[in-house]
Structures are given as C-alpha cells and as structure tokens.
Image (cartoon, rainbow, N blue to C red; front, side, top):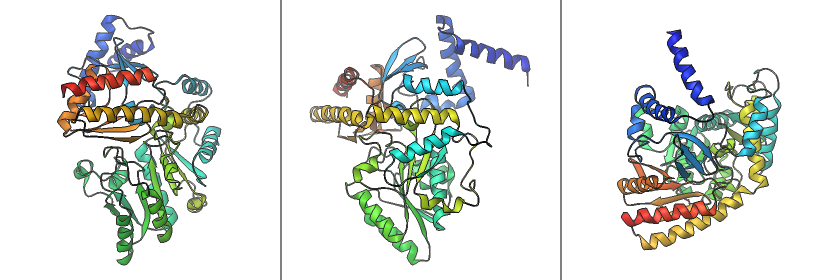
Length: 442
C-alpha cells in the first residue's frame, strides 16, 4: 500500500464532500472521476446498461430533497423511480434526517453485547403497525438478507424442507433468495441453486395447492409458500382479488407457513400500510424493506407470529447474527419513518395520488395506442409497451425532459412509476405533460 497515494486521494475526496459548494472546476472533476471510477473500479457494464437512458454521462447525482434529484451542476430531475420504492417519504425527509442526526450524536453502532433500546422500540412499533399477531421481529440490512431470514425461520419453525414460489417472482439475488426468485435471467448463471424450491404460476392458487399435494404425495414436506402481494419486477402484476385469501386458506389446511414479501409494496406504497390488508389476510411472516428506512438509512426486517420463535429459546442466534443488523442509526430512521407514515397518513396520500395518475394514464392510453396497458395500486404503477425498445425510448424521452422512471434497454417493456408520496400535484402534472410529449413522438 502506498500511504501517500491513499491519503492524497482520500483527502481530495473528503474535501469535496465537506465543502458547502463546489467550484465549476470541481463539479467537472466529480463528473470525470465518477465515469472513470465506474469504468475501472465499480463495473463498466453499468455505464452501458443501467445508466443508458442518458445519452452521455455528464449527469452525476449530487443532491436531493423531496421528489427531486439534482446533479453536480444543479440540474433537477423529478424522481418517479424512487429507488424502486425507497423514497416513499421523499429524499432526505427533514423529520427522518433530524432523528438520525440526533442518534448519530449519541451512538451510531452497537456493542453487540449490551441490550440496545432502539432495536426493541422498533420491534414493538412493528408489532403495532403490522396486521394480526405478528409479534416478533428480526432486523436486517438488505432485502435479500431479510428473505433469507424468512426462509430460514420457516424451516427452523416447521421442521419441513420445501418452498413454493412463483414464476417471475423477485425476492433478491443472494443464493437462498435467488432460489425463490422466478426469473431465469437472474438464476441461470448460478445454477444449480439451493434445492427444495418449486415455482408455479403467479395468481393461480390451485397451482400452489397441487404443488403442495404432489410434494407430500412423494414423501416430501413443505415449509412455506412465499409470494409478493403484487409482483413488482415482473411488471406490476396484480393477482385476482381472492388470490391471497385462497393461499391463506390452503396454507392453513396443509400446515404450511405463508410468507408475504412486502419489501416493495409495504409502508403505504399501494394505498394501505401493507398490501395484504387489502386482501384482509395475515401472513405468518411479513418481509419489509426499501421505504422502511424512511429513504435515509438501509434497513429491512421480518415480522412473524410468536409460535415460529419457539426453537430460538435455547439458541437465540441460530437464525442469524448480522453485525450491522438492528444498528441504532438504522433503527432510528425506521422508527421515524413509521411515525411519519402514520401521522401524515402516507397510505391515503399514495392512494389518492395514485388514483389521479392512473386516471390520467388511462386517458393517455386511449389517445396513444403505443401505451398498451396501465395498471397499479397506489403509487406502484406500471405502463406496458409493445417492446423493450419502445419502453426504453419512453424512459429516454422522459429523461431528456428531466423526469426519472425505471427503464433500461433490456428491461423496459413495463416502465414503473414509483414517486415519493410527498410528490406535489404540480410535479405530477409536469410528469404527465412530459409523458404525453414523449408518447406523441413514439
């Protein structure tokens, strides 16, 4: 290690981070550095694929607030991508930031030995805002990790082995979560994955029951069914209204746990605090993430019924012991996020604004047939186009008008709209106007 080289580079970076305002030269420097670092130290493919809606790489994310993202030169984008669901409460929500700053000034991480209060406070709040008797929580760092804990807890509590998931499901990219995921593009490079997963058609409860019946008939045992209340990555696929109630009934009849993955749909995104509330069911395990950290800190969790925790009495760490899981900073953000979500009725806000957007999109669909379908709940909305290429052109057209949506060249047939719930009506109308401008050119 060349200490002088390290300190020279770290000092240069820290100087720019700590400055209130960059000079024009420094702004250009950040842009050039960012492209070079992605090319040589992050992953050059990201520049070709994920960032491809930009015709050049002069736009580098530097500041944000509310529903806006600014680049190094102060160019503003209205954020209708929302980190695929992270920014439900907006970017750097002042109330969340204030709480995190206060906690940072007290203590940031935990000793791993003493009982830390914020993990307990957050777990209690989770039990109050989740449906039914979801009493105990396990706090994690990322979505895939939370899915891993849900799968492990199901096997640990049931003593059974198999899982039933769905085709086109997305549950994460760690080995266990990827085994539950139902998209070949993500799975193929890592096959064979963890055994004991069977995938059936999404929205078809009968297929789930048949899978359970057939596995039991050949001497296997089923631990859990894992399902998204709405499939997000698959293209905002909304199942029949009776789908989740049927799954709940099937799981009860066969002694199988029901895991609902609400990493994207939770915290008010679909118009209720949790999407399962619209189906009036209580899962055995509910997985949460993304907006759970208030758009400020990374944090995820699972909440489960008390009977699933019996096997932890002799070894409370058997499920897992993530070093940073349940750390005070992240917990403080999640506590503030729950408080803000409930106080300002974010689910109602999402429902009303989402209905408004869907109504306007339906009018655009009748005018511009290239927009083949519009669907969604709350502020989880999908626009379907005939091909990835056309969807990509729409995302690019919106980008050129300073609106961010979800769309890359190889995954853009369904463009997602997931703005923060705090987006203003004026900003929504601006987005819709930009959308119509782009549809005209398509």
